Length: 272
Image 1 (cartoon, rainbow, N blue to C red):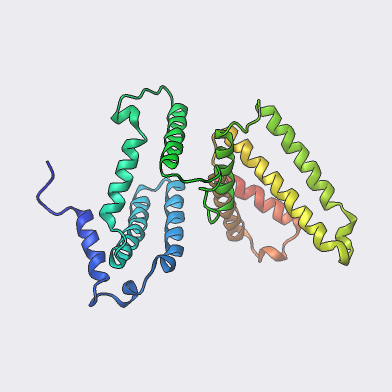
Image 2 (cartoon, one colour; image 1 turned 30 degrees about the vertical axis):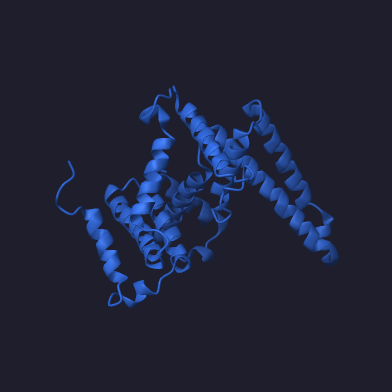
């Protein structure tokens, strides 16, 4: 049975409402969905960083900061008379029940892949019922980070049957795209001012093709390319910081041999 005491979540919602009240906080009162958008994105990335570091205490804190953005946006909407946090919770709860008939109804699935397929089918039926006419890729936000967006686009295309027959085909495509990139980079037009702009655009497109193909390689191995790159950047940060700490002079004043020696030491010292 529900507790008669006010939950911590209810108290938090009340706190945000108080901050947005006429006699509340001037900063909170002037916020809009658009002004809060950047903070929502920043907090989401800080949650991701806490997950990557496997830091439960930090994750709890960052999830709280992310929750602040959700509740604050819901309060802005309530003040505008469009919806409130209860509507948000009701909507997502009903969606989760609808899209998990194998748990809440009589549907049967055997694997996680079956669950994903069922989810997509239900989602498509819901769109049809709402008479939402849109392409397969239209629901993927263009503001999403590029690597993650590429993964979502690739997954959506695969859901429609647009897929290689075997993994070897993906690697062949990657080899082909790398060759095309090398060819574009070696284009003599890059050194001719009147043709440079078009040649650079071609290089950029070929580079993008390589990245997109790499995203598909990641997908074939159930990897999230955004997370993979974050892990690599964190590894580089650790090693570069170790190099700076060990160097007796600024790194820019060192020779290539000094750089190599410090890098190898950093690899041993930072383990990963």
